[in-house]
Image (cartoon, rainbow, N blue to C red; front, side):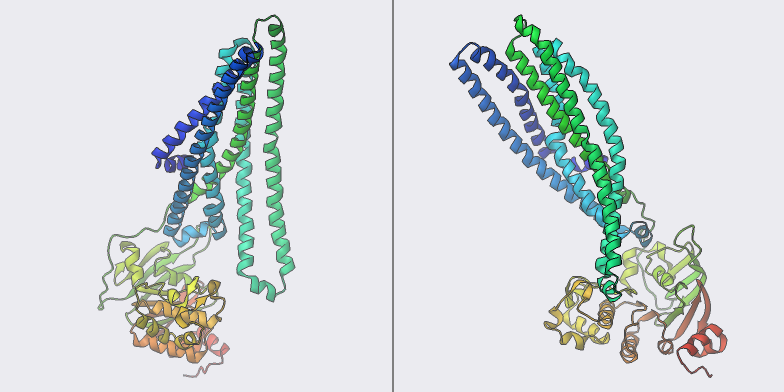
Amino acid sequence: MKTIVKLVAHYPKQILVALLFMLTELATELILPLFMGKIIDSGIRQADLDGTIFWGSLMIGISLFAFLSGIINSFFSAYVSQQVGADLREQVYRKIQQFSFRNLDRFPTSTLITRLTNDVNQLQRFTFMLMRIATRAPLLIIGSAIMALIVDVRLSLVLVITLPVFIIFIVLFIRYGAKLFRQIQRKLDRVNQVMRENLAGMRLIKAYGRQNEERARFHARSNDLKNHTIFTIRLMDLSGPVVTLVMNGAILLILFQARASVLTDQLAVGDVVAILNYAIRMMQAIGVLNWISMAYTRSKASVNRINEVLVEPIDLTSGPNTLTPESTRAHIDFQSVHFRYHASRPDALKAINLTISRGEHVALIGATGSGKTTLMELIPRAYDPTSGEVSLFSQPLPSLTLESIRQHIGYVPQSTQLFSGTVLENLRFGKPDATIEEVIESAKDAAIHETIMTLPAQYETTLGQRGVNLSGGQKQRLAIARALLRRPELLLLDDATSALDLATEGDILRAIKQRQTTLIMVTQKVSTMKQMNRIVLLERGCINANGTHRQLLKTSVLYRTIAVSQHEEVTH
């Protein structure tokens, strides 16, 4: 729980105030049974109305003071817990923003969402409990035992003897409960994963008529979570009746022992009532402590999951140098590059040696899984190669700051990602300070300006979630316009024109050529490849062929097969 302690330590003044008022509330609660004994012995038994009123009024006054102290303690406890929750969310989110793609591969989106929401909420609630009642409960138990011993040692020994039993019992529950709650959080991750997939793919599910199957899959995961949670809560709730049974047994034993002493006037009735009050307070505090132990086990599982994110080593760090482009040098250079996603898997790229000059337009082609996207993702340093070196302007990528590398690159991935907001806000995503003239120019180059002008509010039109109110081709053109707005020296299009017709794609490629931007483009269209300066054909992670359309028709059987499959003329 060091994570909570470090965050709570940022608010020492609020903690001190909360602690002082908690101790005040505790002290008054420990004094009240003594006053109750006084009312019985000095007031009721002596038929002294004035004494009864005096001690009763004093008890009411002290109770009101304790009530006010509790309110103030709750106020500052709530403040600190909310601040801790906000700080922790910020800390986890900041760490996720630093993750490389390899780090993100280890943490699926569904589990990161759970950790940022449910797990942080668990810790936030426990922080409040820690400051409000978790610190108070053990002090109340110890204080009640001490005060009972002060009243009468012999009767109070029963309470003292039962304390170690409860401590052992609670420790065992905490240890076992932590394992169960960790399993609950993992099952919650799985429910979130299914829910996220269903919400994202709802149109596809409906198109294929898979509602019943997906409902059954969600039901199975949800039921698994429900059943495990019920089992855990029921098991943890058993502690309550056990505590009540033992404490009530202790109270009966106290009453049995006190009987003879009261009858022989060796012990005052008020003292017995005071001891019983302390016993009841101890029982309530132990019940609270047991409830807190449940919250602790759950929060411990959550803090372990959050720490997994916070201590995750970032395998890709920014270099010290700033990129200084020089037109006389090679733009991009791959030297004996090998890459694999996981140590247990085969290489996704093998012995890649490739140089791309400034201003050159290069097409990457190959079958699914041949390594096209992987090769492209090495350029903005989403991953580092397993071996070999990737250089930009003859400067190795690891020696450069990530910011300076990515400032020179425009990237459009396979899956078009649009954000909540207006068309204009989406276009300015890569360049927030772009003028409207720059935005319109980029939109025209991406052949999307005319479409935008037909929208209800034109550039101020609000897009639906993930651009749901746009077609696939419109989303792709918006993404291309967003990348062009940055005026990148290097533009990476990962199958980003798959939904475009040949005429629109041709217009976009001509506009890119006029910008004198280096282009690397993943495509499966031979008609598009013919417009490129060079074509790189990948097969099983290796470069199978490298050259122009005409050259590859002559030298590559595989490329000729691809051309024939698209009814292209292969004579040369």
